[in-house]
Amino acid sequence: MLRLASYNVNSVRSRIELIGLWLEHRGHDIHILAMQELKATTEQFPFDFFKNLGFFCHINPQKRYNGVAICSKLPPNEVQVHFNIPILDEQARIIRTRFGKLDVWNIYAPHGDLPGTEKFRFKMQWYDQFIHLLKTSYDLQSDRIIITGDFNITFDDRDVYDPVALAGSIGTMPQERSKLKALLQLGLVDGFRYLHPDAIQYTWWDYQGAKIWKNQGMRIDHLLLSPAALPFLRDVEVDMWPRRKNKIKPSDHAPIIGAFDSKILS
Image: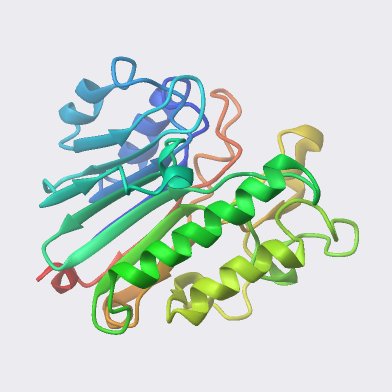
């Protein structure tokens, strides 16, 4: 079994102790770890920490903001962090790695803002260019692809704890959700919803108001699969253990974990 985890750590240096405890708690069963919001430069990233746990790490870093990494028990065949598309390259939000026949993308999509703002326009344009990149880079029916990370958008009202109160808020707007629909129209599949069509499960909870304990969250971290990768999928779970910590301040996200038949690589 191959397990791939996606985790917005909200500062890898602040969360390093928790990450170690979480991996130990899981019995070190994660083979590929995609992290977002590193908030670290290359010099600040804890390569030695992950090396001691058996991971090869590749990062797309940015000082103080953004930043993504893919750490894996097997070294990747390819690593890409630049895509010759200005809006995708100007901030450290994407890393692509290849393991055998499988391409793994880790993204930290822009948070955005309300319509009419520059941050909203940037988010919409970023998604348009990312979708175009995928469309022109792959045969999405035959290539094995996993796209995971923090998308900062919910698919629908099942992914929001109070759709009425949060209607029109960031991550729920129709203009934003249309970008996730466009990804599905390419042929990609939402792995969690494919296996758990009626489940109510969130991946992010605001720090304020003890929302984690009230389960007042949103599902904005996703695992998208191409049709060729889908037959290898066995499970998708959200691991609440690292989010429900009190003695160590957690990230505001919980990791999502996809389990796959290891033949997906060959």
